[in-house]
Each structure stands twice: as C-alpha cells, then as structure tokens.
Length: 403
Ligand code: CTP
Image 1 (cartoon, rainbow, N blue to C red):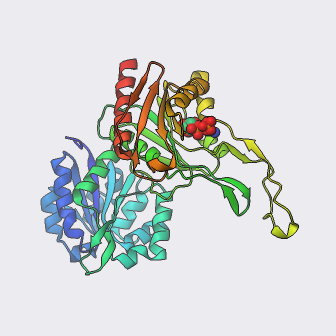
Image 2: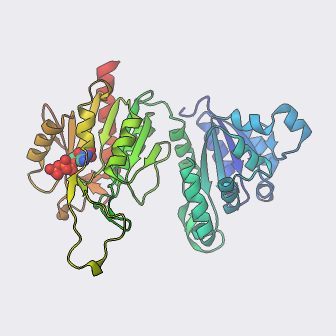
Image 3: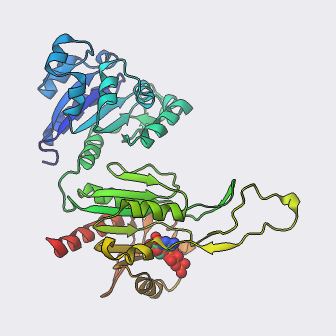
C-alpha cells in the first residue's frame, strides 16, 4: 500500500465539494494512511463532524479554543504530528488566509503552525478562481512551496463552466502519494533536472528567449518524484505549474541557472533538459535602447556558460549519471553523438525540433537515446511517456551501478 504508515491531516473547507472530502478520507485509508480531520465552521455546513469522525476513525477537530482538545492534542501538535497536510476543498477564503498568514480558527492556525508540506485542492466558482486576488494568493502560496492539485475544468455546482472544480479524490490521493515519496525504485536518490528556456536581457524591457515550454523537463521531474526520488528542478521562465512533490527553483538567465544547479549538487543523476540560450548580450543596456538615438542598437553577443559541460567535467561533485538533451533540426544522431563526446556526458536524448515535428511547445516527442555504446530509437510518444521511460531507464541504471 503506497501510503502505509503515513499520517495525513485533512482540512475540510466550506464548499459544496466538501462531500468529496469524505470519499478522499476513504481513499487515503484504503492506501494505508491514517487520517485526522479538521472541519472548518463553513465546512460543517456541508458535511457533519460525525461523518468525518466515522470515516477517519478518530474525533473530528473543529474548535480552536476547546480546553479538552488542547489538553489531548493541541493545534500545534495536530499539525506537527502529520506527515502531510491536505486542504480539500481549499476555498478562496482559506487560500487567502493562508497567503496572508491569518490564524483565527483551528484550520488556519494548524496551517500556520505546521512545518510539514501542504497540498491544497482548490474548489470554488470559476469567477472566484480567476479573480485577480485568488490568482495572486495562489501565486504567492506556490512561491511559499505550497503544492496545488487542480482545480479541474468542468461543469460546476453553481451551473457555470470553467476551472474551479475540485480535483477528483483519486487525483488528490495520487498527488499526496507523490509528495510523500511513496516507496519506489528511486527512493533515496537525488535527481537534478533543468527545464524550460532562459531569458537573456538586452535592456530592462527586452530579452532573448526561445520556444521551449518546459513540458518535457517538468514531466521528467514529476516522473522521477513519482518513483520516490528527491528531485530538484531548476526551471527557466515557463507558463506551466511547478510539478507536485518537486523542489522547484525558478531562474531567468543561463548564469542564474548554472548557479542554482551548482547549489543543488550533489546529486546521483542530473538531467539537462533546459534550452539554455547559447549567447547573451555582452553590453546589456542599463536603460532602454531608444530608436531616436538612430541606427540599430549596438548589440554584441558573448557566450553563456555551458551548464551540461561544466557539470559533466566537475570531478568529485559530478553526478554518477549525467544526461543531456540535444535539440537538432538536421543530422539528429550524428550531431547528438558529437555532442555526447564534446560535452562529456553519459547519455544524450536527441530530439528533432525542426518545425515539422511540432516538438517545441507541443505535447509529443520523438527521441533517440544516444549512449557511448549505441543508439536506441524510441517511437513517437507523449512527453509524459518519454519522461516515464527515461526515468525508468535511469532507475535501472543507478540500481545496477551501486546496489
Ligand atoms: N546546455 C547547457 N548549457 C548551455 C547550452 C546547452 O546546459 N549553455 C545543455 C542543454 O540543456 C542540453 C544540451 O546542453 O542538455 C544540448 O543543448 P543544445 O542547445 O542542443 O546544444 P548546444 O550546446 O547549444 O549546441 P548547438 O548550438 O551546436 O546545437
């Protein structure tokens, strides 16, 4: 059972999706976890403390200033005693409280007092979800390391359609299992992944970038975490969310990325999926380059550090397995083989990024795994499937090397 022995504190907020929290308790327990439930005052309008107590097999915690509760299990212990806190449904109000550090009831106090990871499953009306305030609160919570699952898009209890539905209980339980590093073939391994493009400033308003979406690198980080690895993802600017259960560091430039990578080492395996800009502007403008000045801006380029090559040649701190990507538009295998030798890594995952393939920004990928001993052609598949296959291969290789 994936969650055997794990202790989950489930905070049930006041939304119609609260009824699904009851199913979530059952799902957690079926997977072997023990569950304690906190029901907010608004939550108790939708489900009863008795249902929560019956399904958790424990008392339902509701009151911050209960003398008997504080004597048995105070709010601090309640949040410290768990391996993971899950907020489902996470209402707009609960998210706002969390984002601002308010603590005026048991749920918000437990959330502020915790030193454990927190998974939230937002559920609210579409307009409340898309409101600038909720989006701002969600972004700042993500910055604090809170992990989001959902919301899903679909028809809502209020009759509107759009994002705001709480993720299904099974998806929430899966995300919790990933966060708790469910035992897997990469348990105990540290994996570093780079992903996305880099932005290289020209002046305070302009930059050089590329078409990388980060989908492939993020999928690799998520796949490694789901096999139990301790994953650090160093990502350039992307429009996709941080993968659950992954420590994500956001950077802008190639130099920032190298610095974050060096800080994240040591690792057992490093996978360099980022489309790092090869060049940056040597004479970056302190002020915006103006047209009135006449002529063209005096741009000159200089080479960025090669992160993959730097880490491959690190000596002592070099991860045992270093994997690079090769984005090619022609002579894919030949260029990848040359890159393997030039950069000093162990494997290259070569992909054809010519326009026809639609790889940059798309969901599908056709790759070739180039190692020192040969080339394997993988069929065209989704980026998630490429990630799973690559990570399974990494797990098998690491196992063969050290166990
Ligand atoms: N890479 C890196 N740092 C750089 C450039 C590339 O870490 N400054 C990594 C990429 O993450 C990828 C691999 O090197 O794993 C190859 O990237 P690619 O852009 O295909 O190769 P380049 O070194 O840019 O070579 P070329 O421009 O000749 O194709």
